Amino acid sequence: MSNTLATETIAVIGLGAMGLPVARNLAVGEGGVVGCDLDPGRRTRFEEDGGRAVTLPRDLPTSVKTFFVLLPNPAITEAAIFGPDGLASTPGLLSEGKVVVNLGTIGPDAVLDLGKRLAELGTSILDLPMGKSSAAAEAGELSLLAAGDEQIFSAIRPLLDHISTEVVFCGELGLASTIKIVNNLVSSTIADVVAQALALGAASGAPLDLMIKSLSATGADNWHLRNTFPNKVAHRDFAPGFSVDLATKDMRIGLEMAAKRSIPLPTVSQSYQRYLQAQQDGYGQEDWGALAKVAEKSAGTELR
Image 1 (tube, rainbow, N blue to C red):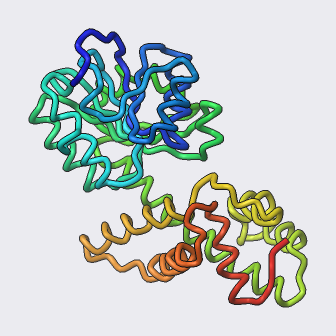
Image 2 (cartoon, rainbow, N blue to C red):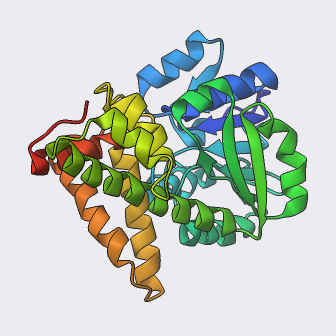
C-alpha cells in the first residue's frame, strides 16, 4: 500500500546504471527522494546512500509530486505506470497537478500514448530522453532533450540542474523522443560502419592508432572514431557506457517507427542485423564498442 504518511515529493522509478545516479544526485541536490526498483540489490545501494526505496511503483507514497521514470523499454515503462502494480493502481498516486518525467528512450509513439492516458487522470508527462553515458549520470552531467507542456517543463526545470549540464527544449510532446531515436540510429550505425572499416584496415596491415589519427582529419571523422575505438576497443575495455542491448532496443524502436510510417531505412536495417549478431555472440551487456568483435571475427583480426 502507498504510504500516506511519507513526505518525499520526488520518486525515481528504475535504479539501474542511469537511474541510481540520477536518484543520488536528486537526493543530494533537492532531498525528498524515494527510489523504486524490483531488484533488492539496487534498492540496498540507494538505501546505503541514505535514501529510501520501495519495490513496486504502487508502493510509492502519495506525497510524491514528480515521478522520474528510467526504464529500459516501452513495455516495462507501460507496466510501471498502468500495470497491476503500477502507479495508476493506487488512488492518489496519479492525480491533478502531478508530473511523470520519462527519461528512458521508448520512442515517440509510446510517449504520446502514455500522455493521452495520463491526461485522463489529470497527470502530465514530460518527454526527457537522456544523452551521454552512465559516467555522465554519476557526475550529474547528462544532456537532456525535453518536450511537452512548456509551463510544466519550466516548473520542473530546477530539478534538472542536479542531473544535467545541458537541456534542449524541443517543443510538443514526442519531439524529444523522435530526435533521440534519430540520434541513436545514426550513432549506432556509425559505430558498426567504423568497426567494419577499421577491421578491414587492420587485416590489411594498417595500425589502429594511425588509422584513427588519419581518419579523424578527414570527412570520415566521427565521435566513435575519436572516443569508442581509441578509449574502449583499443584497450579491450567493453564495460558498458552504452550497451549493445540498449543500442539494439533503440534501433528496433526506430525501425518500428519507420515501418509504421512506410519509410525505408536500408542501411540502418543492415546495421541492426549486426547488433543482433553481437547479442547472439554474447556481447549484449557489453559496450556498443563490442560491435568491433563482430567485425574482427569476420576479418580474422583484432583491433588493439
